[in-house]
Length: 440
Image (cartoon, rainbow, N blue to C red; front, side):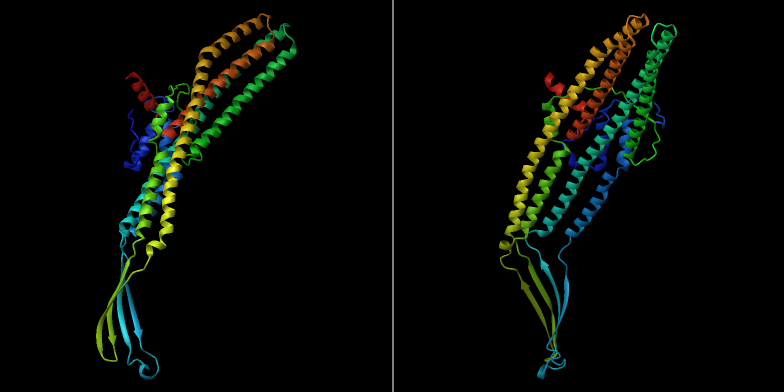
């Protein structure tokens, strides 16, 4: 599968980013490869594509960009031309009574902007568009991480149902075995009742797990607005897990992620705001030109005028200092966000590594001995050497171990999704980079 770097994400169009993130996130769970997929099964890639196509949270940015495009058009406008008319010396008293000495002036006026204000406004509006695109990438990562986590919830619940069904099968076998011993007078009758209750409990656990799975499927389908899910299962291998990258490699990768890029774009936007405020220090030149008709002497003359505010720079000094302070504040906010990302990566990596260790230990050192112990205890019970309680206790220990295995694998996948969301890089790429650097 092709991997795309996010080192310069702002140069890519939104649809390229979306496609890249689909490829990125599909590494979180290893999906079974088949030539055809029935409509009753869902793959992670299909869930992601549906979410990207139908998520209201992401489509909101389309209208936000349209609003910004309107602002760009407005910012690109030059000062308007104004038409004015003035009438003087009419309806007075004495010699200026009536309209015989009326002076009529028709003017055209506008403003000559100084200080490169037009380009500053356009640059500020375009910086808003770039920031909105960066924010969309961050929100896309969050949405994809959430759909991945919900997908993993369903996948883990399917594994739990399988474990519960195995337990139900074993409980049924136990009940049958206990019944035979009770009928033969080799065991007390209350053991049969306890086995019957255990079988009922195991059946209840299966039904409860299935209902929980359906609720999780509903939550997954809601991500793309489907209220009546058309699928009943998801595909994937819950126990196919990649090794974790090093913390140093993650720290290096996160520096190019959209989570920090958005702060860089905010800084660029604020820099545009500072330049726009600085441009306002330069006073604009207002001009007026027109024609005046003087009825008293039956003559026409041209009129013209220029005006400029005084001390505009002093009046704008406070706003300029405010915008410079906000610009410096954004630098500190980025540093703070970087430290928080480092902490989140460190914690996610710690939890994932612990979960991977649990999976390995449970698979290799805990579950196999418990399976063997259950077989031995079962045979010992049938031979009358162990009690029913020891058989049930060993069976429960095995079930607890299987549940812990499923929970650990689920946690490893979900923390892997968190890491991918923070770094905007698939774990596979990070691992390969880390290994290749060590090889050198």
